Structure formats: structure tokens, C-alpha cells
Image (cartoon, rainbow, N blue to C red; front, top):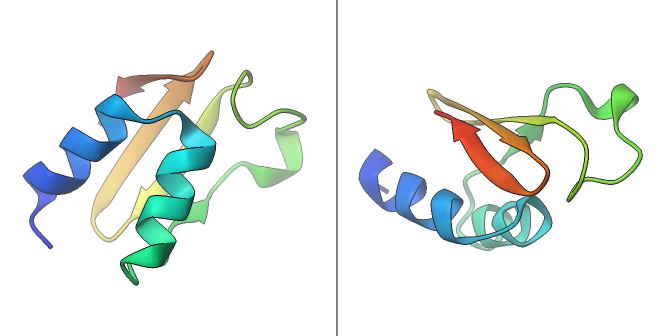
Length: 64
């Protein structure tokens, strides 16, 4: 899958939905800071998908 498709989905979905979306497509998303998260849709979440590292904060994509 192209990085632009992943980034488009990441920008439109909250982290929990994006993780499910990525899993459904066999992209094996990894939450890098999983031990620090209480609520995936509110806390800062760092997700690695392939070569991309995405950062969400308050449910919004902050950095890719």
C-alpha cells in the first residue's frame, strides 16, 4: 500500500479506528508507546506502520 493512502486514512480516522483499518489491510501497526497510554483516542500515541511513524494527540494526527 502506498504511503499517501496510509497518511490519508491516518488524517481522517481517530487512532483506534486507524489501527483497526491498518490491521485489516495487513499493515501490522505497532503502538510504540503502548505502556504510556490510558486512552488511545485522547493520549499521545506513536504508531509505526511500515516505514511511517505517526503521532496522534487528542485523537488528531500531529506528525507523520
